[in-house]
Image 1 (cartoon, rainbow, N blue to C red):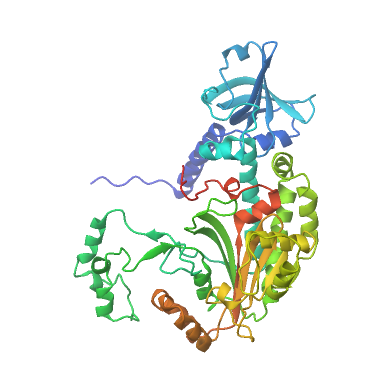
Image 2 (cartoon, rainbow, N blue to C red):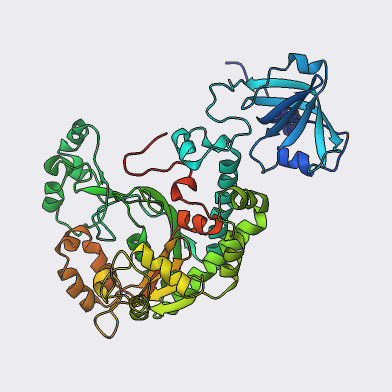
Length: 515
């Protein structure tokens, strides 16, 4: 066998590093293009750059073609000048995807500092403007665009919405991270209905053939179920296997309606936790404020015994996200204020976010509604749930401000809400916002084991679904509480849009699950 070739280590290292740098430079040159936003912000006039994006507007004048190109990096378009005779060979159309190389020039036009004098224009992806459902210089209604969810991001308004969602999402994370919360990924597949409203989606495999995989006698002995002692006997585990019950997981499983219960697990080891993810409600509604899939922001705090702590968190979170959006996306928000929101929305929202949120007990809210001269479709009395019309009225009655309604009757809130001393109400709260209604829900959690046992005894199904929930109270519990905020509803409040269907990338509701 021939001896292996050897090289001095230093020489080999230099050779490899040189080759690596050379390859990186080639890759860098191959991908060297500037985002539209960077080009618009550039101070280097007469610099040659390349940009890639989509044609948002196109017109010709005396043989010269003018393209407005955008790549989603910002709300503004970069004007590209295609001079003669190059324009004769460019077959760009409205909606087409292009790559443009040229020199940045100082612009003499209004509303733009620079423009790009092109030396080459390549059409990467052609677009037939006659078949393209989005038309140039046309303002399409939100209802129209819902039929083209796969094309909706190409519209100026919806691309603005996606940038706003991005900033708002990051603002939520920054708020909790700065306050020392730990981000928890709670499960989407669950075995319980957290809210107890039976508005849940059941999850089952498409083919029952997969259940035969669990018929192997070695399944329970393989250690896959658990490597340590299990609270159920081996016999109980075996009889609850998927093959015997006809369920993939051994029991019925659903899409989560809330991550709250699993966040409560974490408050047995962490003082402050939060999640931000999708939730699913099988609610048969076509209204403007409901979706079958939506995003929830939820937080749980250990060692709190006063509802005021949660109210403070909710108010500060809402205001933090609002300020982040207004500071980072002024031009995108301006599109909504111009084309979507009511004329008074800008000033009313600013006033709302600069004021302290109002507070009412449920009893005071009912009295206010009962004494009102307003004719409600649904009559009110102590013990009834508040409808959307009642929520809207209360926000107007306190001066078009958000209002916290606290201490609801126990029967109106889930089983886990902490019972007040009167034994009729619970330490729970809803945050109502003008134009939206309920935005946040919160409560202190019932941490007393004996009281929780009595409450759960009245909900027999809960004993079967979440036996572990009681154990959280038996092993080192503490007073705690939490809140949940509907992300899409928060965007409605900030932007003045008319429906949650228009502030989420891919809305799903009864009868509609397109794209």
